[in-house]
Image: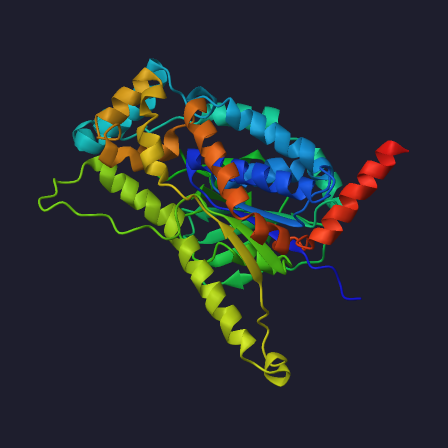
Length: 408
């Protein structure tokens, strides 16, 4: 009997869009439960996350010894989100960060008083640190790694100081750090600072300092310069990978008006955000599919000469445009934030892509979660096959055994 294949979970970045991931995980948990898998069993040996996906990944990993409880805790947070839990959304907070930052961008070169202490970002995300402190139990993370409930956790961040993309990983397995072109790995005890760094959307949230390898570097969102989002899961030993995206992988061609209006600042920023958060994952999936196809054409002798190995993948991504969903919920943002974003066009339909990353409001996150559950069910057959539960007879046997145990 061969070794059990390790299953990896890859959660991409995307700010408030990460609510979709939680809905997909809910949908998959329901499918697996109906197929007979105990709710407390963790289906994912290796969990990797980037940006807001890193927060979801760590929250799941910290309670991997009871995955059902872990997922319910994450669901509770996302179902009841408000922007004030992530960034200062009051008038004073917005003035101190956003208004000063926008003013500095406009004419800060004239204001000598800001040269010594310029604003660091559009928004102040200090409330997020408090939320993470309440939400996460890192002592349980190490216990889960020690007792085998989890093989590895990885989160990624981008170093503004060194220009490298760094994956921080925690595991009890003898896995050596890997080095690729501008991509490094570092075995670490993952903590709140790693998550603040990984989720620091460029320009929107401030960079986070982390001491690594004997010196301090400032890190921002892990989606920046992330050329191979699936790579950490494979390096950590995954044989098959479930990938949950935060944007549509195959966007239909949009009809361009004959006379398009000049793009707003929010429209440009949203376009840049989509490039940072969405494009690299699509490219990496295409790359992995090409590698798998190439390997399928090699004979055993040729396969023995390469270190590459086939990786089974299942990708679930939004079936609807998230920016269009966001445009229906912009009004739920706190008034000071809405006024600030309105000044750059983010409350307009064409600028809603930018708002979609900052809309940490329950009305929006709940709709994304519902979409995630719907999309998971749409992939039901693929999910059962991916987790080797597609044998309907086996599923029926499990159900029969459960009914018999209750009868006894």
